[in-house]
Image (cartoon, rainbow, N blue to C red; front, side, top):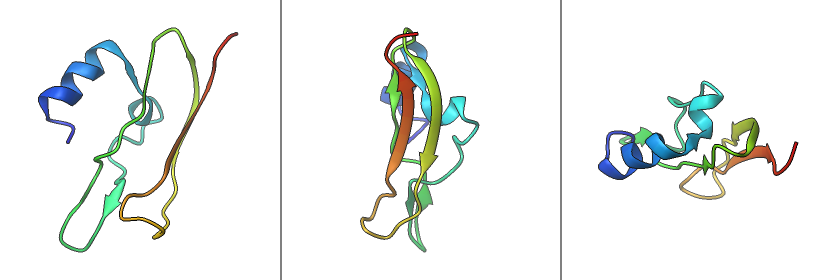
Length: 73
C-alpha cells in the first residue's frame, strides 16, 4: 500500500509512474470488499517517462499496468 514503509522509501529514490501520470488513486486491484492501488512501477530518474496505464481486465485479480519510457533521449 502507498502508506507502507517500503513504498515511501522507493518513492523518495525512484519515479512512481502512476503518480507522474496523475493516476495514483486508480485501483490496480478491485474487488467488492477491497479496492485500491497495490501494484507499482518505479523508474530510475535517469529514464524519460512517457505514459502509464491500468487495463481494467478480469484476466487476473490484479489489473495489468503498463509504463512506457525511453531508455535514451
